[in-house]
Image 1 (spheres, rainbow, N blue to C red):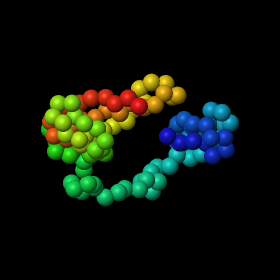
Image 2 (image 1 turned 120 degrees about the horizontal axis):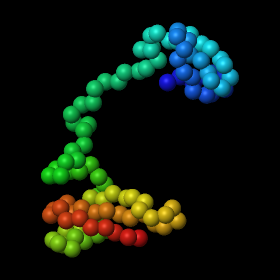
Image 3 (image 1 turned 180 degrees about the vertical axis):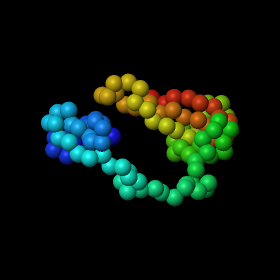
Image 4 (image 1 turned 45 degrees about the horizontal axis):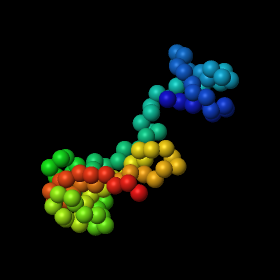
Length: 107
């Protein structure tokens, strides 16, 4: 996708040129786009976060401020989501690190 240098609008292809529908600016198409992009090294396996259902570590933050209703453990993974309107506090979703029990926490 290319944007016009003059007005910032999206340009469209017209033969060997890119044309701006807003201001009519025309530029030659870039044939070699590889110079515009940077390739990065492949991610190593130790950098990946295990997130499948049976994983020992889910890659989420933990808290010790809660108590699991099922097993009594005081440590759980949690995520925070805005489930209501913007002026309401977010909802915290917990998962026990020991038994896997899930619950919600409302502020």
